Length: 280
Image (tube, rainbow, N blue to C red; front, top):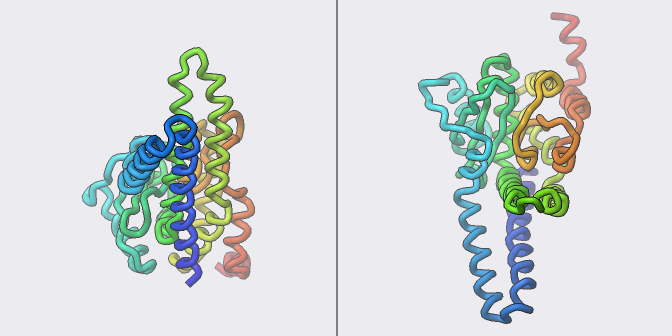
């Protein structure tokens, strides 16, 4: 299946990220302390990579303020995710909730056996069942494809670089001017907009219709135009669509394709949808 090739490519990118990080540490350590310092720095880099692999989802979910969603609090959502996970032949991911009213959803983790989906109170309140199912299927597709492995790693690295600029005191703006574009370059190097198209198509297949997700994307885009969203711009790759205004630092991290093009591609999966509406 095509998604297995995508998953393998994402695992390879994660390994390349680890190798690249270790190479940078080695290049820094060699002129300073030779082989011994290089060995220490590379070992430290591997420890950090291991911690990011196992705990990256917790770091990301902490960055966005998510808490675990008990089954008794939203049984319909848990049932929908369990059904979709069964169709996708992956374990049911953990579910989290974001307390704010801004309609959004995201996924994080390391793959099918370590994935998590977070939905906001605003999305649960505003989205009809078909739209919510489409969004959940989209995020589940990211987990199945192991997009979350690369997305989580990229967000953790980019977020750490942005937070590093804050320790600069009166040099904060200067550090951010350097580290912000560097963090954005890492994100864009690892993440292609094609991952969103692939997840959209997979969600349409899991749901048996592309229209729930297409309608949800339109609804979410309208929400971003009406309500200002504030969070770390480095978290942009996690969401179903970009919730940030594309200006300033947030404009550097945009990895999502235009909503209009995504909706067009989804509608094209069912070219007779207009006729069905007229017949209804």
